[in-house]
Image 1 (tube, rainbow, N blue to C red):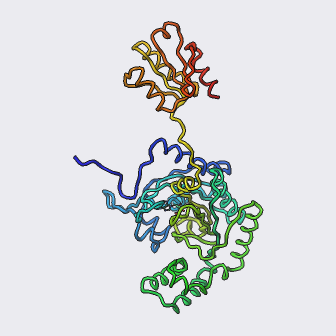
Image 2: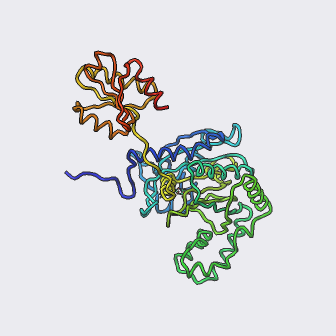
Length: 419
Ligand code: AMP
């Protein structure tokens, strides 16, 4: 029979590497918990229309990359390609806006996009996502950006840059959009780019092809056409970031793959990752709640790619040896010792010592090999004679020193030795 492999563009995260994955996830979310963000869990699939309306019908994410299916009652559902739309849906559905503002939420979870797989770009990937909803305050923008930086710093990352710009709002962006469109209309562009200029002219600015990029050198930029409130907002965000010691680079051509951004918009790029260098990004999305049928309240947030952050850690040589699976490994010799030994494992674990047991009835040699492989610092060898004496042999696997310890003291002794 043929066997199965993980679907194209997906991968398994196996122990011991998975410990690093969990550590990254926890480090990225630790600053959020310290800042009062609460964990939210939403479904992995939602109404397709939520993403079409929220993320934007014309985006690649929605138009080309969603895993969409109909259920048995002909409802169109999609696996989530990002987390913000679902969080916003929950914020509206549960009227979280009627409580204390801002509502601070974070989530960690799987996302699905039918992309062309390459290093750092997958069809199933994990994001840490956070949103601060209901308050339009430049200080909040600065807090949000600073929390992302804190997450990266928590991991020891240094070789990354923060790119930032303002995308304006419903007041100044339409006017700018027209200016940009008339500028683009005068250029020598291919048919597809022309079409893009019609639907989403800002995205044309991001075109990296040299002949197009050269023509775009003189293109009008949003940051030069901000209305007064947007300009003030952006100036204040930058002032707060300076106060917080956060460095950034102005990126007036920054465009993100999702349509909902307004005002402050940012991206983190890592310098050791090659083509897929974005490790996170986000911004303000003041129209999103209203667009999804909620009240007209603002929001800001970001998503950090856990998988890419892990690649960034590797690129900076920050992934050390995988931690040991357990600290103690119990090796019983004989049936009576097996029974006492299994109880001993539980005693060790209850004392807070990660412990494992020589399952599978191995002989002494095989069991000691298993103890070594487990990465344990100590082997606890329990023979018939030890059992009769009420002791076990505690062997330090790094030095091969061995001594008898009373069974009643064993868990406490190992715990003390490890501390
Ligand atoms: P986005 O939701 O597109 O703004 O992406 C936010 C972050 O998620 C990016 O900066 C990446 O770190 C990560 N990300 C987005 N798409 C993928 C993907 N296909 N594979 C792996 N990571 C991704």
